[in-house]
Image (tube, rainbow, N blue to C red; front, top):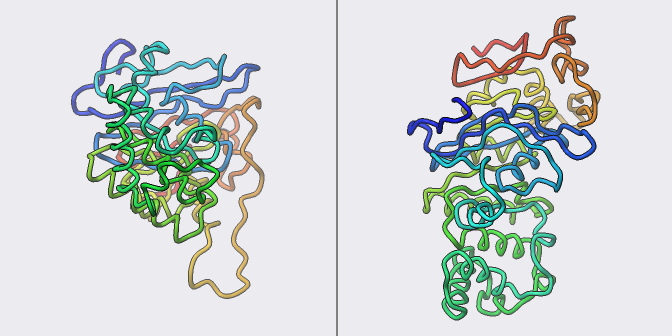
Length: 328
């Protein structure tokens, strides 16, 4: 895909092409991130903290920190998101793309009622009057299974539980019928029962409206059950990507294999110690030569520390590694 040409109609959804982001002060948080997400499909981003997952989401929303330098391309169908100015981003956010943030208490305004906050997007993007927007806000609270929705409409964020606040954030994100939903750790700090309820609700609403879903999570079990494609990120790069079943059954990158090995599993004998991935993700200010994972990799050879590998595009199950594990 050339810098001046829109993607073909075969890729009518989201296209991220060589996205790079450098923060003020020189920290490079994204390094040539590329992936695609078809309309109506689901994609998960997984990796340790500091790998660039949330920064990728913020780039897709046009919400990068002030002064950040961005290069590469972002396309939604034939629309070049990377060329939009702030006014165009304001019209795009909420109406065409929406985000569920990982901490609903910081995403909600403590000074406004739940009904006011859901209605705000409807009034802005769909030009509804106050009464009609409030009526639709109530309908959305009902659709996200909010207990006593009419009473909650008048409540403030601090009067709700964590699970209820996450339902409000989801209702706000979906109210204007976006085509792409970005969910960044949407079940953080929720107990297992509420987590399952929120994820089931997202699944049903995404399927009902034919939206594309980009789901970010540390939880590998969530990814295995909830998305069709998965992209593994490390040090601001996508190091492995493919159908979820294939990546989980036959991880090809040593980093993906290490993440899989470290997850707790049912049936292990009591007292079993899980493998530990030594070291840590390199700082975004670090100078990286060669493969970013090489210092932590048991398969690394001398050349891995000298030259960075490129993504293997030979199959649907792609990997960025000089010495990948066999796919079969």
